[in-house]
Image (cartoon, rainbow, N blue to C red):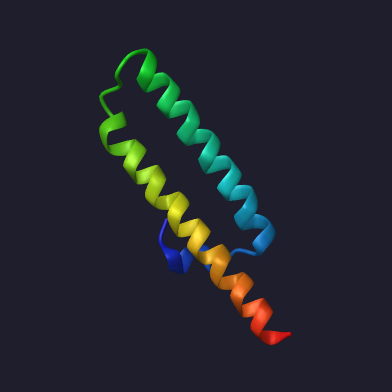
Length: 69
């Protein structure tokens, strides 16, 4: 997901998406630890980047909300 796409979500939706992506990452890391997966080499870093983007957009929205008060 790109940051532009994420900015269209509300804060609540972003938190739900963040929870979902963190769960996906944990599951993928667990499966990779049990027996190395062929796609884990690219999927794990991609999920980490997506999580970082989500957190960035959440922080931007919180900052905007604080500025408007």
